[in-house]
Length: 128
Image 1 (cartoon, rainbow, N blue to C red):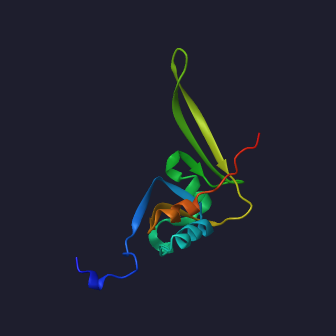
Image 2 (cartoon, rainbow, N blue to C red):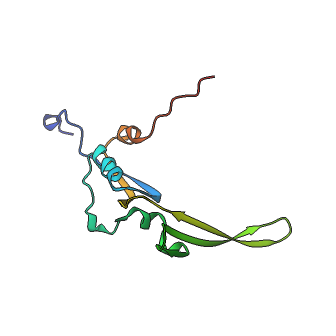
Image 3 (cartoon, rainbow, N blue to C red):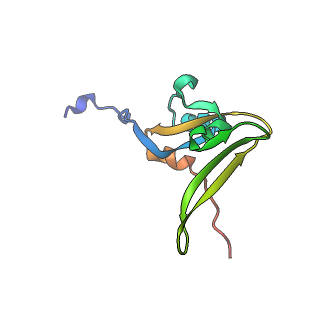
């Protein structure tokens, strides 16, 4: 290794945090996440930006409709009862006073783990 070309600057290395499952957040929160880790924000036409309600209540999650006061998705799931299996219908409704854009965060590039730690919410310990 040639030490004559060494610099005080750390190498330009980027890591990528993969989020599985992807996280749906409002657009301004996604912009904050990418800004905090000094990463370029993906373009809005990347297919990951849409109305927040549309991203949270996905149309392929069951019978979904946007009619009425909010978005609704109905999904049928199989549950194990005491003596037999039964089907239970889950009805999820999302209503909002105003529409805003959302963003699907699938991965987040970072250069140092402290950038990810700074994004985590800090909770004060419960006092007894």
